[in-house]
Amino acid sequence: MPEHPVPWYGGLEGVAYRYYDLRMNIVPLVGSLKEASSIWYETAHWWVDPSIRVRFVEAGERYWFVMGSESRKPASNRGFFKELARSEHYERFKRGHGGEAYLRFGTYDRLDLAAAKKRDVCDCGHEAGDHDEGDGDACLFYECSCRRFSSLQVRLFKRRKTITDILFLDEGSARGDQLAWNCLESNKYSLSRG
Ligand SMILES: [Zn+2]
Ligand SMILES: [Zn+2]
Image (cartoon, rainbow, N blue to C red; front, top):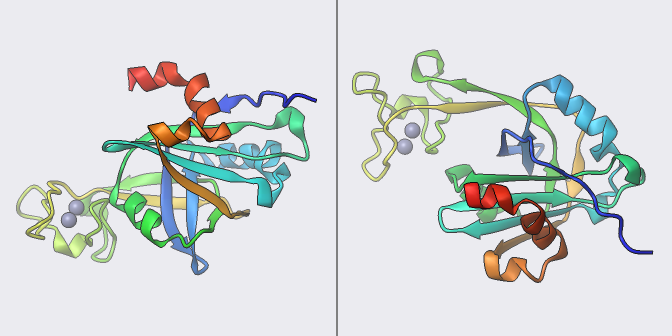
């Protein structure tokens, strides 16, 4: 039987990468914990863990996050994607994941320097204490180009899955990957809008 095409969900607000429970976590971000919960119980809960695939398709300073899986409930199955800028957190995940990660959905708040505690970490990878309150919140590290402290505070939906099929691709090698290529082909209108 031909594979039934799975619809794509393009409504993610971002993707966070964090250590929790001694393992890297991939955290697709949505607008509310209620939405995270409904995505979980309609879709991700039914995924068969060893069949969950995550693909990162890199293009210059940007990349596509692509995620899909076989489901025990095919009628409500979906794939997820988001085009994003390559961040410090992304690069750290790429270096450190070791072939597996937990999947959790989550929500986020943005914290500025005035609201941050000393140890809160900026998107540039340096702590609030390393940013200058007197100088437009710029990072004090010589080699860092960050001009304003901004920290993504992630709240997690507690349920999780384990991902063991993770690949980093470029646009050329994405052609040979069924999930990545299906996503790029189906959603390229947003790629060109980019
Ligand atoms: Zn910074
Ligand atoms: Zn910095």
